[in-house]
Length: 211
Image 1 (cartoon, rainbow, N blue to C red):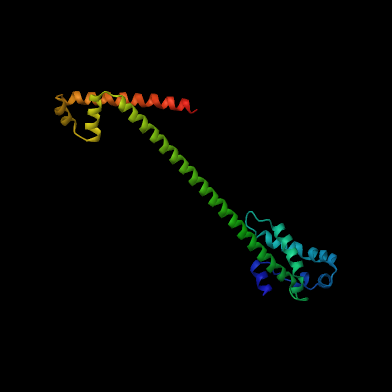
Image 2: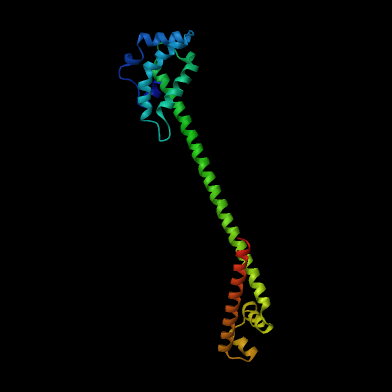
């Protein structure tokens, strides 16, 4: 099983004797199993370079091959009793490295998704804040407009009501007031200009009072 993982990772040595059949390496593994922890340095020295070389070409951006190799040797030590002496230790080591690499890749993917979710949330909140601010400003300006309309004389208010609330045509209003269409158009223009100036004055005062 572990040999299959090593082949998939592209790290199965052409000559197993170089890594797997060295008597001193296998002997060191046996001594570590027996309790001679210091002998694990011999195991690391024998397999660190080939394992790291394999991981360098497999680690995506953001994952350090040395760190994966380091964690792999720690995990291998913790579960060394599961290794059958004389079998393919390098392939067994590769299987552990594969699992560590997959776990780290998944962790980074979750982290990336969490960051993306946060950015989307922050952007949504910002847009909502902008929309609320825009709505608030619109409400303030609408209130100012109502206040300015209330300051108009009754005749001007009557013309505005006929044109913008009742939606009557200008020629109808002209007939109602016994005026020409041109006269009513000029009157409406003057009223709108007066309201615009009134709202702007109130807005400047509002900004000054809240700055």
